[in-house]
View 1 (cartoon, rainbow, N blue to C red):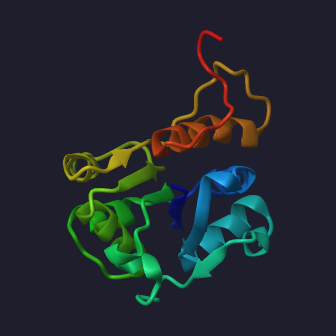
View 2: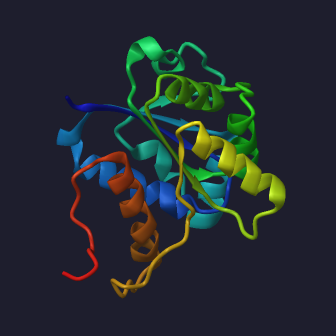
Length: 186
């Protein structure tokens, strides 16, 4: 069964991760039949500040405003089975961990967790304080996956996008997508 995927892009630094994720998801269109994107206003500002453009608007995906509670993934009946929050701000992490559904990003995460589907949060902050760690623990205990935006260097990346791809590829692996990526020992 093809996947129904919702990608949330929050205002944490790391817009390159979101860009690389969208690029890679569009390269594997045969593995999903719906791809929806929510961007916070801060995410749009960070994308422009860090990447120097507004190219997020050029992706051929379905966008939803973060206050649109009529988005299909705001209900479990829509059967979205994967949610990726890339990058995930600590504020978003905290609201998800504490069940505060104050926008469609946090509502969708709540739905994914309650339906026992796949929620992956690429947290992008450092260092962590105890509140962050406890929120990550809460989400993990609830069935979510925390994937820190911590790149690897085994593949000898030479560009910022290649460095970001080392983490994005882990997220896609965790989500169950079949991708071509650097594999240790090959």
